[in-house]
Image 1 (cartoon, helix red, strand yellow):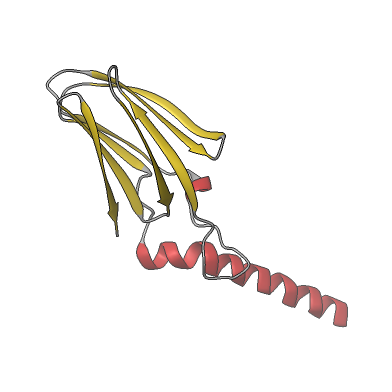
Image 2: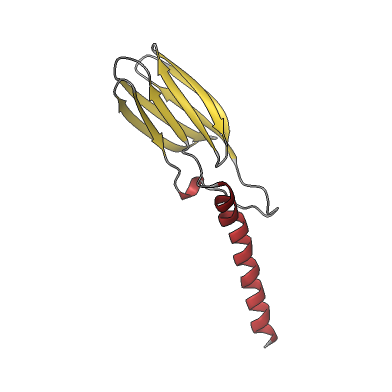
Length: 135
């Protein structure tokens, strides 16, 4: 009987831990923002490639054909959601290098990513600018 109670208590603690780490923040603040958004403010189309690196590991590599005055966003998959750590309240956020390129311009910048921020990239007059938005 004591073993069954111990197992039940252990499972309850794990469920509460996961609920606190995953469900509570999403319930409190809402769905995480898109990881990034690219906006083509030029009057001509561009081929845009975005690569995200975690150290030397390639996490994402996507290309878009962007028409004038268009925008695309990348919704986070489950892997980009908050990850509880053993300290309960903190999340395993990471630093990621974003490399964004068009036909004639490339930028590279490192961002500390967390669920309620998005990085906006703007293509305008042949150059690429960025801005971070946090809720």
